[in-house]
Length: 68
Image 1 (cartoon, one colour):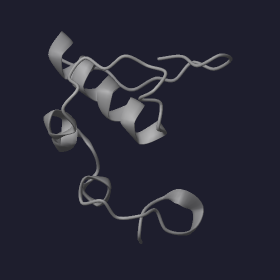
Image 2 (cartoon, one colour):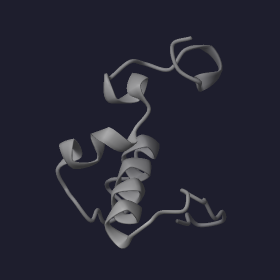
Image 3 (cartoon, one colour):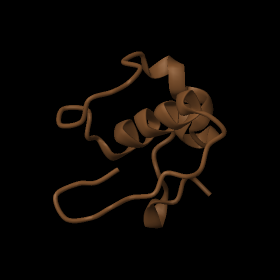
């Protein structure tokens, strides 16, 4: 995944669907849904790939690393 100047590695996946869902989760996490096309437009589709605090809708704590 790339933006104008940087490349982001989302991970390594067993198949194309897992990779596409992880890409969608990362696009949503970064707030890029208006500039990046999603493979699966329904956010419930990739909720299982997000960390539990992000899936629960918790705001990041100090330092942006979750509530803890």
